[in-house]
Image (cartoon, rainbow, N blue to C red; front, side, top):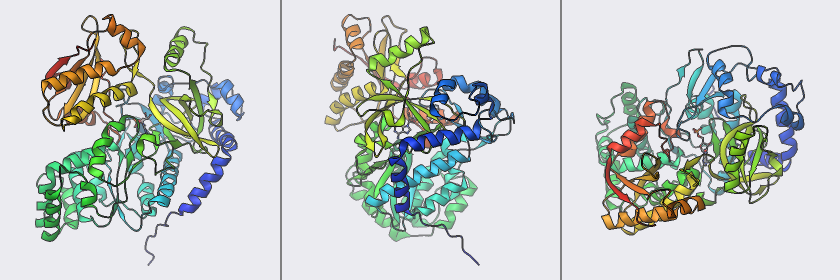
Length: 586
Ligand code: AMP
């Protein structure tokens, strides 16, 4: 009888292929566009635009307009409703990805197909190959905090789930993980559990059971990695008791989970003693990850953009184990791959594989001009921004990303801003800068997610001096007062004096350096910034609210600005405020 064998990934070949295609990025882009248009030229969307079989970039740009998700919604809706004629792609779309809804406040429906799955596996394999050169994994296991939500059926009969769910539920995913010689240590029942609390507990338990084998600790976004070890701080004694007795805690109630874990657990007092000793010996959980998993080579997950605020905590747990940021993509498709794994996340870049889609970039000269561009566009719809091609971008410049992919998106504005940091052969290496949307604006002021992040980073230094931390943060603009003002919400690890928090509030106000904000504050057309401190567990409630409406933990990103119509989240915040400070900085 033949055992099922999964071939080990040939990392040198993966790297060679990547080098070859990035050396020829311009041609590969042309070919990729040609293949996409040949395949889907018969789809209604492209037919209407009069390409008439042409597949060159020039005709494509001349005929096909730049679009946002809103423009495509009527088409995607018909796909979701099960209309079987070719609408966006020749082959029928059978699966829909739901975006996390935490970057723009609303979940979007997006087509997902085998081709997207293949590009996902290409991205995972490429970054793994580059990581393997620096940090080889040898017959180890991965403690991977993978949470796959449910796939449901749309009324048209399509499968729908978050993009991560669609990937994790695809059999190719486990196969590819095996080819990395780092299979996930948790059984499928843990990954597919409907309850993330129970799933997380079991992931931690599996990790401890395989502690010697674990060579990497990973999650899709760094947020889940931090959440996992914060949870470990709370439940480690219970985990040790389970290991000692060989019986899983009564907190795990799903029979499928209990029986899957029962297969792994046997009474093991020595292991329980060892873990207890290690945990008791730690100072404030510094270095808990290498302490628990002595052979861990690195910690992996998306750590850039809105994940940067979690890096400090993750480094604390990681001790001297390197943090490596995972790749850059969205429910819409992939954009870049991390081929420089030795760079710390703060300076990480993503190289664009030129064969996974056709990429264009709208130049954004200055922050201010970028916003004007949209306003101009609204009043003079004929003024279209002029995107440039993948190999035409310039180092040091910022751009908005436009993607054309293998799943029916054509010249789609992703809504992300990136900066070109350099080139890998002929393809650009991008730094993720921010979501394009303004997060905070009242009148002249224009502050982005990145500006908010920087202001919070500055003010949290004052908290760090007092040996406390800001666990998470968000904001909104309050225009119910006259003048309107910014409100920043913080959940903290412990108590800090009123004087320090007042200083933090002033520091936040002073740290928004945008000229519009500063001048409006000086003349009081924007009122004093307000810092509201939240009770313990508020962000957990927000997370659960989002999970309750269909977001996936794996893709969760704390929304950094709460829209005025998001009553549910505003109510959770409002109900949990414990203290309030107004800036006296101006
Ligand atoms: P979603 O489709 O809801 O999971 O969100 C996708 C968005 O997450 C992207 O458009 C980016 O704004 C953000 N994102 C994804 N990958 C990265 C990354 N590596 N670095 C920073 N932000 C990222």
